Length: 473
Image 1 (tube, rainbow, N blue to C red):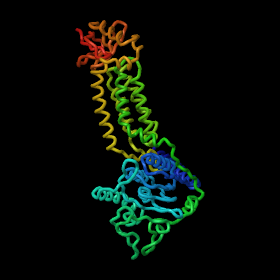
Image 2 (image 1 turned 90 degrees about the vertical axis):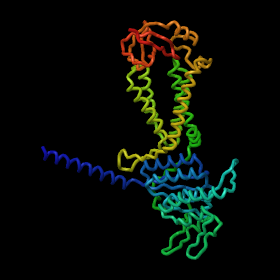
Image 3 (image 1 turned 180 degrees about the vertical axis):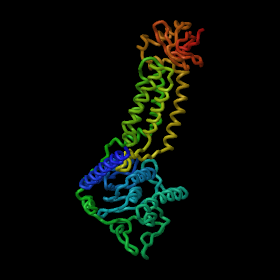
Image 4 (image 1 turned 135 degrees about the vertical axis):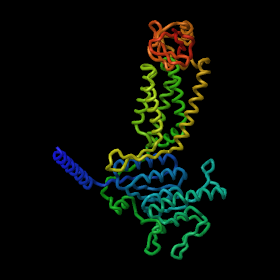
């Protein structure tokens, strides 16, 4: 038996080695892949979603090279920081091609790639932080704020420069006007000035052994660059903006409000008979929330499916198997998990390792959003539970055909007629559940105590659409 097991293990191992060898051979013969990401606009939040999509697609496709085709005047520092973190997720070769200009935030992002090449007559630098004012202009920054901002940016960019082998002193001279730059006895930037380099200046070599100042070389075009890097015959994929990235920015900005509307809408739908406006509002709000995450490149359709599954389990708990608790808790857990995961940045894992996933959890954003939603939902539920049934708006929100009644007035009259009516529980009341009164099954709730299935109960009063009952011996 032991010998047979050893032989079987050997056969499986040889078979697996053959598969691995064949896969490696296919990969060697397949053309290499290059992802090209044009950056033509200011560095603003929509670009984050575009870069995230490009990086995830490149990782998934096991691309060999990611090229940033750069032409920008700069932009926001917080957006730049996000983009740099996303670029760090790509483990292949990264290159920036400064097509015409890479000012300010564009220079920071360029330094986050392993190599920088420049087109003829292109420039890079002028990366000092500015204070933007309403209307799109820039104003002089107070000295303390400028020192604090400059220090933070220098640390961020210095980390990227050191990682990718760029000259840290050159980068700091682009950011901090108090820094001068002198190499091999030549003053390249005087104190009080911000360094900006032309393509010729950036590729000039200094030191011993000689090393380019910043640029690895001037190249006529992007096609010529790929040939220079050895990717002339590679498969190219250009990642283009879809136009909906800007919509995703708006949706994700108001995501706490969407979640709040969704929770309150579903709550009102469960508290009112039939299916009406609250349910439509809640489902629509959740749908928009997940659409925003999908466009932003955060969540996929799988989390929408998890949310729908959780909602179905919750509905089963309320209307089909009341009192089981497990269904309701599982459904709530599924919905909460899907809402959280729609905010989590998930990257494909290491190529060749099935199931390998890289998580980037924006914990601060998740905590803030969920705190707003929980506090807002509790407040809204309390206010609506005490105020809404007494207003004329209540009759507009609920379905007029619910339970065969044509109006709220008829519903209230029916509730009055049921007072004192005797029935039998058909599920355990914990304290909510169902009871049968004659031929009619009603949603009921005890006054806090648990009432077993099959016990006689009497209707004492009504709370919204639920009958409040007490046990009868």
